[in-house]
Image (cartoon, rainbow, N blue to C red; front, side, top):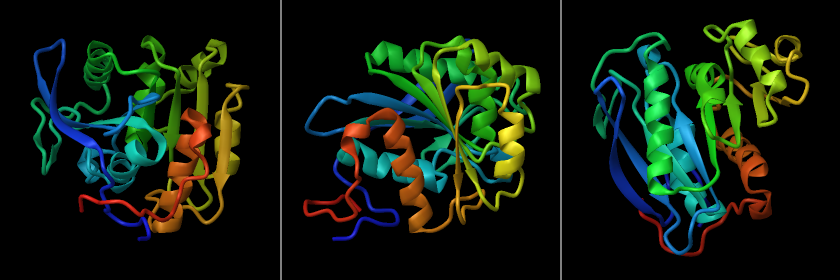
Length: 240
C-alpha cells in the first residue's frame, strides 16, 4: 500500500495537555512508536493561527502519522494559545509570538517530564519564528525551520545562533511567498553553521505528496539518518 495523504501508520497516540507558567492549558497530541522506544523527539510548532495554522497543519499531521512508525520518532503537536483544531482549543489568546514564549517552554517541559529523548524544535512558518526567538533557551539538539518568513524573528535573534553549537536546518522553498533561497542565504549568513536547503519546486505550504516526502525526509536526515531512505510503501496495518 502506498504511503500518502492522511494515512496513519501504527503508533501509540495520546491526547495531552500542556500547562504554561502563566496558567494556561494547551491541547495537544503525543505520537510514539508502538513497538520500540523513540530515538528522538520532534516538538512541532505550527504555522500562523490567524491564517489557519494549527497542530493539524498537514506537514505536522503527516509527520505524526508516519514518522513514529518509519523513523522511531516521538512527535508532539499542540495548539499554541488561542488556537483551535479538532483536538480542541488552547486557552488564552494569540499574542503575535510574544506570550507564546511560555507555550514553547511548556512543550519542552512536557518532553522533559515524560523523559522523551533528544528533543528538536520543528517550526513551520510562524512556528519558525518561535523556534528562532526562544529555542536557544531550552535543552534541545537543534531546530528545523520549514518555510521561515523571518517576519518576527529579528536579525539579532537569528545572529545569536552563531555562537550556539546546536544544529540549524533551514528548508526554503524555491517559490516561497515570503522568503526565497537567495534572500534566505543572505539573512541566515550570520549563522555560519546553518544548513540551508533550497527545495526545487517547493512552495510555502508544501502542497502535494512529493513535497511532503521531501520535507519528512529532510527532517529524518537531520534527526535519525539511519532510518533513511523512508519507505513509500507499507505492508502492515494502518489506522486511517
